[in-house]
Image (cartoon, rainbow, N blue to C red):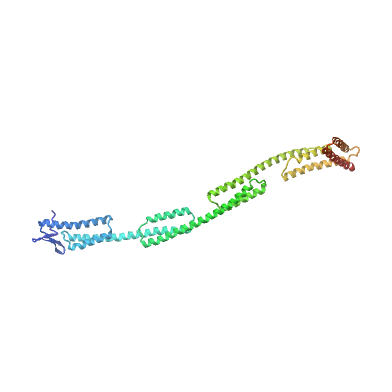
Length: 402
């Protein structure tokens, strides 16, 4: 058994004393056993207090204790030591308690500083979130991303602790107002967008209808120009809803493609015809320019007339191309006329073979008319009379010239 006589004693009548630097004081009485047992009994009471102090000391050291509560408990223990019914080193325990109080007070200061720093940090974080929300509410037009960020801000907000109730309430009002403002602005935007899309759908319906009405046109130039204008108007018009826009666009493009495909086919066919016509005219022109006019003007004139008759049956050509070829053919015609005039001037009416030939042609025309009248064919009679009249006029002109 421990020797507690250094901290207390029991006198003969059983009075128990504890020894302190201020002197002895009575802490109780003992009659239930030996003095040693009595001192041990009161020492156990002291040990209980000492154990409580040790526990507080341990918790303060580990950081698990609340400094304020620890100070309260230590001051309570310190106050109780002046009249505690215990035997032990009260002076030493009192010093120990005082030191622990000083330690707890220091930790309390540190704890309050940490809490204040944590509070300031929490306020700063929530303030930053509020300001971000207000910025989003005021300026953002990335509606989905902004809406997602607003929800993320709220989730983060809920994880931030340590802000005093008044400040937290004020910040929450700002965030809530920003969220409501963003929601209203987004709602207004999409309402306006819906209205614009309805208007765009109506306008693009009109463009599609006009394009489809032009798809079978054969007025190639005017229609192509109008379709280009429709394309420009399409690009300038607002966009309809995505699925509607796609369907209208497919119809619009289909109408344009149908027209331009037909135009390309028509142009290809025209180009082929023009190439064929150009080849034919080149061949006829080559033959005309190769005529030996000086050797036999009459034969050259006859062949030129045949070429001229075939010339207009070759097909159409672009004006600038046809004009150049026509000028070359007229040059041949002028050359033949000049040769014929020269031949007429060199001959007399009686020995002019051309006049003889023309008189023979008149005679043949008279014979054809007689055969037609004999057959009673009105159509042949009419054609024969017209042919005879024409040949007589040419003969008269030729004889008058000589």
